[in-house]
Amino acid sequence: MKRVLITGAAGFLGSHLCDRFINEGYHVIGMDNLITGSLANIEHLFHLKQFEFYNHDVSKFVHVPGHLDYILHFASPASPIDYLKIPIQTLKVGSLGTHNLLGLAKAKKARMLIASTSEVYGDPQVHPQNEDYWGNVNPIGPRGVYDEAKRFQEAITMAYHTYHGLETRIVRIFNTYGPRMRLDDGRALPAFMSQALTGQDLTVFGDGSQTRSFTYVDDLIEGIYRLLLSDYAFPVNVGNPAEITLLEFAEEIIKLTGTSQKIVYHPLPKDDPKQRKPDITRAKEILGWEPKVNRAEGLKITYEYFKKQLAAEGKLK
Image (cartoon, rainbow, N blue to C red):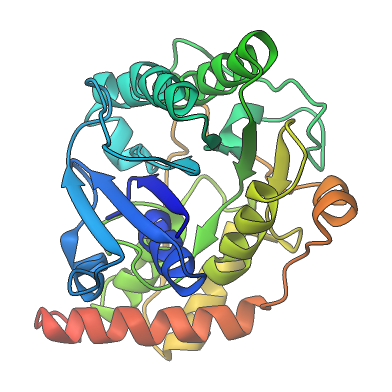
């Protein structure tokens, strides 16, 4: 049985990856220090013989007994509300954590895939963003702790690939949504959903003209799986090119939830990207991948999930 180590296993994306690899017949080793992840996301796997879990911080030395075929590094705070609260840990998991895992991959002769992000493009001056664009990032701004951690992560991964001949893969993930997102995540979709469902006005930053492109989680996981098993070592955008302004998105959420709250405007956070849309030409050509789930369908599933979560917490209006 092939063995895969997934870091950030108790997080939103990590937990969905655990499910996918279990379903594909792998032995899955999940690792998470639970700083932003939740065991509730993976507790349905604990009874399985082919799943094991380590509560561990990958910024410290990482040891896993036995052979490993693959390592997927998804450990990192991913929302501004988290990485502004724990900036040092964010930098460490992207730098020290990645270094430790690359060392483990080298020792185990395993292929390693890292979760990079559209944030490496910063506030882009090229639209849509393709993988050859180098980005427009403020390294000392509040978002720099996340953006630069991911940029360093890409650089050290490519160095291990070039210098040591390690098999590596780099996925640049664009905004993703779906079940198991945290209600207090702070990003646009969970913020709008939880505000709508708890009777609060929806908060839009700036004038709402900034754009995002939202990918349903199942589509993203499929793209990641295909990239891992491909022969391509350079970064690949995986995202949904269906672009929408945040104001339009807030209006979609109000319509979906049938609530009557109004939209209120707050100042735009520093260095907030004004446009975000992936060029997925490379993913189409190399992986034969493109998103299948449209936003209306994905939002309905996510809405039902959030509604159930809020009802369980007694917060549903």
